[in-house]
Image (cartoon, rainbow, N blue to C red; front, side, top):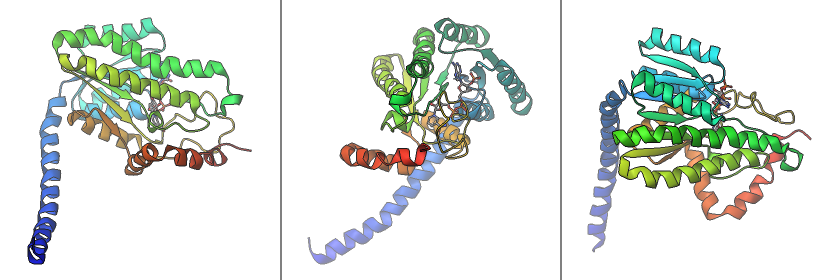
Length: 300
Ligand SMILES: NC(=O)c1ccc[n+]([C@@H]2O[C@H](COP(=O)([O-])OP(=O)(O)OC[C@H]3O[C@@H](n4cnc5c(N)ncnc54)[C@H](OP(=O)(O)O)[C@@H]3O)[C@@H](O)[C@H]2O)c1
């Protein structure tokens, strides 16, 4: 190739690339808009819907015209939210008081949802709790409680929902993990472990359920402004509150896009995506950097 040919190719590429990228973005936006219509009338069960990310999911799906089941322990909050969704967005929304860490309650949630709406299109396993403490200072019961809600709650609801999805040859399970399910942090060993467990569970199930046309999407948000810190089992010694991070509405919006794009996994945040690539290549370096993290997170 002569220098002139090379120049011509480079000029061609520099014109083509932005055009191709622009067309791709336009195409994505347009197909998503069309596919968003497909959410209208879909039955969506959301655990942990009383506050934070779960509440944002409820509002976001209501805006799309979905039929919604709200689950959480705080029955007053979800009943009130169900009413508001009905009034504001004219959708059919019901509240079912559920503690997902209790298998019978998780099964009851799924059974009642099917009884009311006939089936479930999308199950969002979002209920979760956290705890912030050095491992050696932590109460081991808190580790079990986190596993009971974050991991076992997901397993119970999923196990109860799958048979009817298999029968319909259709369904989607959305598991709300965390970037900490990809790269654990100090002072959050127990919480990170629950999210790694969810990740392994989801990756295995995705393959098993493919033949039944049931998709599994794992969502990995980064720090989000919700009640998670206020609701944490152990939080007395931490330096931060619930007011840092991205908005729960952004998490909801990106989750809906991930569902429409039939994504297997979605990590939220450009920095987080880059950070995880660096972590995968240089984990020891990231270990070293993270040894400094507790200084910013825990009071002396
Ligand atoms: N906020 C973040 O920085 C962040 C980052 C990454 C991932 N996440 C994940 O996002 C999910 C939602 O958390 P969030 O930040 O929105 O926290 P949040 O505001 O504290 O909300 C947690 C929700 O889970 C429900 N819940 C807790 N224990 C439950 C149980 N045993 N049974 C049923 N529901 C239960 C709570 O309702 P009740 O108390 O009424 O039961 C509440 O609706 C969690 O899985 C969390 O791990 C959060």
